[in-house]
Length: 503
Image 1 (cartoon, rainbow, N blue to C red):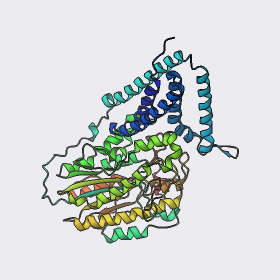
Image 2: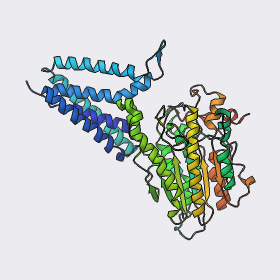
Image 3: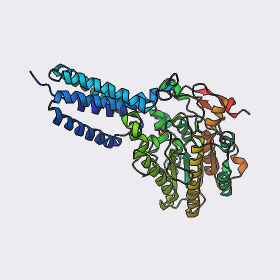
Image 4: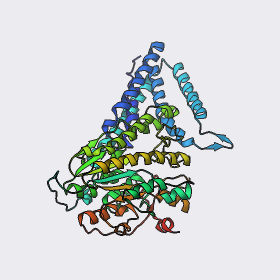
């Protein structure tokens, strides 16, 4: 009997890795693939080698390995489905309940394959063909994106004339510091039974204007940052992409190639990016200086969250990488004035956004939920403790920036959205909306009367007002609007301005 070559374990492993990549293609890069690929194939070589030594049958052991790969790559998805689900009083969303189900299914498949181990040629041939087709489709999907689906960025161009960079320019450095998910003091007082008076007092002492009633324009980072950095509302994305689209390509490109960045580069500024580890604020070819802050990246974290590694998620090394990345970012920000010449510095901290990995003094904390895209941010005390650590590091960074600057810089400290401790995404209540939209928004703009900054209430106007005051432009100050959208439909916008800004 002809023995068919056993290719399906390798083909299916490659497909599984690329499948996750394809579904994050707008924010992932090919540089994210080597580490997970090495880990997966090291496991395959070890397991398949041991099985072959025991059974000396390539077709049988190949089916077992493919079954293991299937279980490995689907476990996290299955866990996400059953998480928080109950049958009566029985909580099925536990590893202790789901893993035995997977183990039982694996034993059944192994038993059936072992009984038929001498007649697996046809099944092997089918699996080779099927996994090969799957691999071709996923490669085609990725190729199509990179060849045909790059975003149309014509609307990003402007009339700014590029001028030569002048290191002797008196233009002040411009800092755009995004603290992901950092709430307004009002939100903290209203929902967290404490306050942020100490940090706000520090900022005021340093000359910052704080917009006490500031709220975000949107509730998700891609649309929020693409709006604030391009000084415009981005509701046109609903028409361009469709309300039900999950494609983030255009907002990501708007963040990378923003009008604010173009404006400053045209005036002789160099663009300095302190890399965040997240998609469009991690890698940007437009950056003149790109500062890597560790090996943390969201692709590897997402792979951990969606595979069987989910069982060991809290103990895996990427948690330390996340912490190290944040610490290195603060360190780089503190010492950024080693770079000469007028510069536009952008840094997007992925904290205090969940998961809550820091205690109030920066000590490591084991969070309850590790996914950056967590819908519910609990416990609230974990959030407050993480803010306490951020505040201490921000003070050190600001002190050093001001002490080492030849002239007072422009510093914008802003969140992209607020926290979300209420589970009301599908039916948003007023308290949920006020918590999610309320953000920190502080601006240091030397020599400008505070009254001239009072029009800043939402981030869409931050750069407009700063450019008007610092560069004598005449940008119109837009009406403050708040647009809500749920996931997975980030472009299905609903105007909730009255509910957010109302008493």
